[in-house]
Length: 193
Image 1 (spheres, one colour):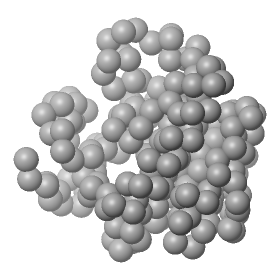
Image 2: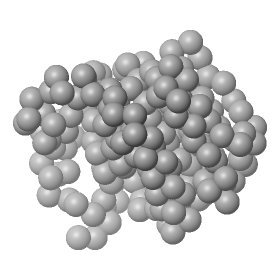
Image 3: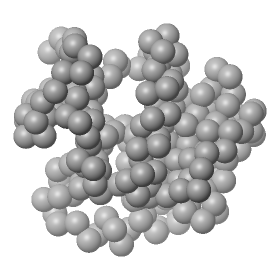
Image 4: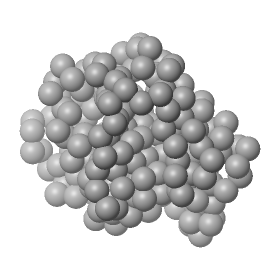
């Protein structure tokens, strides 16, 4: 399938989105709460490598910790506001995940993760999508995400999103999962390189 070009503000219903997402396995799709279809470009090699390092560290911790489930960027979550969002990495507390039916787990889970990461890629910077990613992070928090990290490797900057606001960190060596991902420490050396 070829990449899709969608006019800015193009709207579809949630049912149309669900059918499109099931048919189109090559493009990363999202749907805003207002029904606007977002087609995200595929990542380049550097972003793919960096995101793999994020997922690897989160998954290793999650396996050892055992209190939740880790998800990659291909998972679409249905947020309480109706948006369908796909964070680069996410984690859901096991009790919340287990409260879903098998059908909900197999489809697009109808919940906001407890934790999300968005990694700013070269194409995000080139296409001036940074403000869009900031708005997406705020939307996550507004819909129940407890902790979120927006990581911008080129400037070595991280925005930490919490219910009580946003904190900007310049050139941190690592990030801590606070009271959401207890004892999780993300080493940023492989992400910033």
